[in-house]
Image 1 (cartoon, rainbow, N blue to C red):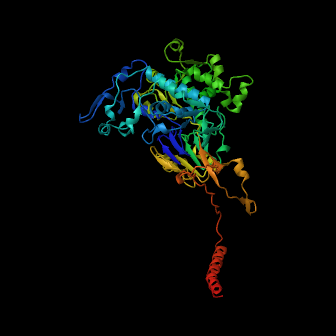
Image 2: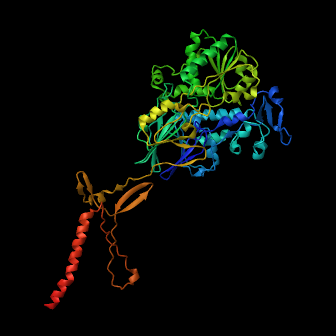
Image 3: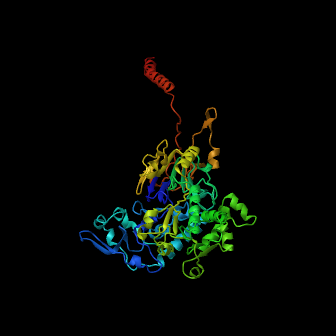
Length: 618
């Protein structure tokens, strides 16, 4: 059993497990942090960005004025943003049989895998994961296609040139594997290969292994996976949460007795408490609105935004800010809000019960009815005529490199009355703001990550007790900025097996047993002998038939009777003789009685020649 690690991002995993003649890909996350090396894509012409100077090396030997631009001491690529794909050269991706998806954030690289590698297998995911994943992919494509770039920048990727560039562009890794965004056609083709599954549904893979999704408690439809044969069990835990939010709670008991547990997707901010961050988010928002400023919240179109809207629903009236408008701007804003209301069976019990009253499970339905929350596909059209300030705007993308958020950064960035509040933990807020410097608006970092922290995962592992744990390398050592914090790492016995991008791990257990079925007529012929209380053995002679990873013992076929013939046949035409199988010995040989028996036989044989000589004399 081997594990191939195709991604270096702990929360955007892509691993391949080879287990019992099946090849299973576990997630296919897309590392979008590579977009931070690029200039933003403004929806309208930006005089500031267009006047940025091109980059030329100090000695003038390297001139990349058309590809690279300087801004506040940093150098950015002036091209359509690209993303870091999972490793494609480590193994032949066309041999992958199935892809298991844990949540909609971990499937964003799916079109690159299914459409460009010869993949012919099946993708398994829950319905909310499929539908919300589709929305996020379509949103990403729309962001890119509506601001096309005429030129592509490639010269800077040359190794000899890249090492001359200033940081952090100089330190970017695997830049030749970066790719532009896929198309809508590729998205539709990739998602047509998805087969829907429900929690605890058992799916047979070629008769060899069985896979089962379990609720992970992180997002709508998010799953952990059990991969097991009759005698081996592997658990895949990715993006899980024990906090009480809107999804179904995490299913833990089924993870017990695992031979190997593959652990990914822990919180990216282990020192931040999500409840504390929500409180800070609300207080900073209220402070800005009271001062007459606007609040910009860069976010994904699904996930934490549901909890933010619910929190603000309760907070704004108590803070006497009930008249402040909320705007949610995304090409998929309407679909996202509707999907959150119709996936009732995937919600926690408290929200499920509201559906039967009947009430909408999320309060943003009431916010929309009372016109406190308005959603728009873009800043064009109705939004421009209905927009009023001060207000709160939720829009994407959290990287600040594309989407409607770029327009608001240019619009509000020059005023210190306005505030941008970062809630998504996927991007460094300092790197995200770099191309907008100098910036007058206030910046608040309130990352909300409900995934397992190190304390929670340590307690979980004590409860479910896997024999071996496999995890990304960063989880086995303290954060570089806090080397003294040994509590921010996994300390287990035996120590976890760590992996990094392009690692190949041999998992530390071997298959010892295989289930074999006996046909009834063969079973009737067995004569068991009891060798000790409760244990009986029987010798069996049979033919083993293996097909579709199912093994069956069948009786030895008897030779067909030869019809009598008067004509003399050649010897070569005689049917081959079928010999009866020899009896087999089983069990341990008792040494002392065996040696005594040998001595006795030897003594008997030594007497026989003397007896024969005496008989001859007579």
